[in-house]
Image (cartoon, rainbow, N blue to C red):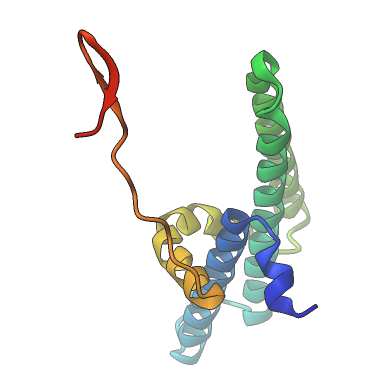
Length: 162
């Protein structure tokens, strides 16, 4: 089985999010290299910047997987779904805060750059139309044409399309 078939079987939204996160990470990496070559003192250590950035991107990717799994499991639970979703959110939030505190206290990485990498999850949401078109192009697929929702007129029990 080739990579295309393996990727086709994955959740498309999660795949698109991961593509967006990787793209954002690459963009930030290139900008960091350009700043270093330009002689800007913004980045003291290019290795520290790269390690921190990609650690944040990996954290974002793992958080997206956890978010997907939490939503997938909870939506079948009916009334308990809200509790399960908030529990998953709480777990992710506490873990990120703990990881950031460890990074700040040990000074092994730049916490601001780790946060920049983690924010790739937010940027990915804005890039979703682009990544969706890219994955459709890669898999040679098209989206179905949207159809109007049927509405009911008062006094007429049959559905009428406008």
